[in-house]
Amino acid sequence: MAMVTARQIEQRITKDNAELGMILPMRGMLSLVEYYEIIIGKFGDGIFDKIPDILCTDKRCDAVIFSADETDGGTHFYLDGCETDSLIFCSNALGIEEDYKKSLIFINQCDAICMFFSDFKYLFKGRYYFDMPRLIYTRISRGAKRVRLEGVITLRKAGGVEIVGQLYDFSPTGVSFFVPQNVLRVGENILAEFTVDGCGGCEAIVNVVRISTIGIPHGRCLAGIKMSLTRDQKIRAEQLYLCKKADEIRRLPDYATNTKIR
Image (cartoon, rainbow, N blue to C red; front, side, top):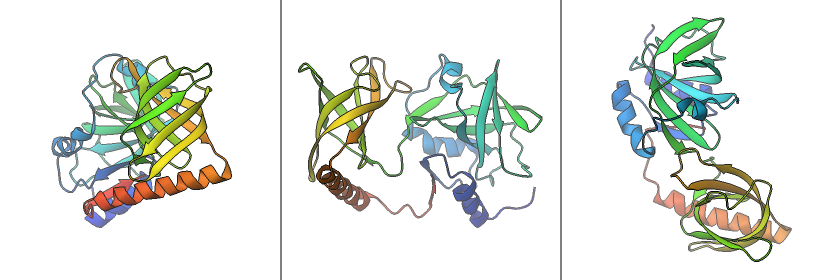
């Protein structure tokens, strides 16, 4: 394999892996284990049970695969299906030369990022077959336009039922938060109220658009809502977002050595 410069690695990550939706540090010349040790702190506890049920969702998910080659900055793949004891990936990249016998894999499942080690099995008709992992790690995926929030969100359902959730993140059009399982259903319209510390509050009619339990402690779920806003409410929500985003940026250290995989 030809020598790859750090600049080529950086360009390759930002171009080829543009769909993953998370920030990864530059690998540099680290082994897979060393690189894994840098990232593992962002993920939850390891999952050993029902791994095929978690990874095989019948959806074509974006993925990034790192080979054992210390100069490999990761290549964009798609998880294109599953068979017994196998994950199947395909790629639009031409002339892939990496040896994937030992690999570190990240899969974007929209609501969650999954990370695990796997061994390459064989290549057949342009599709890469990997062993089904026995251990995976997950973390909640956060869109680039969302900011993290702390605090509570109060949800009021028809009939006066009130639910209190723990905020996770916020964008000008939606909010994610933790609540107990089975208290909300997708498609439900409710009244939501929350406060962005130091910026103000927001109250709006919202629609529950997703509920996920992947990587969430037992008994809880991550719910996502879309806000139905009047013109004035939309302006207010954007002001809250910009206020919180500015605060988040002020708190960031200089990550000049990091590469964003969006």
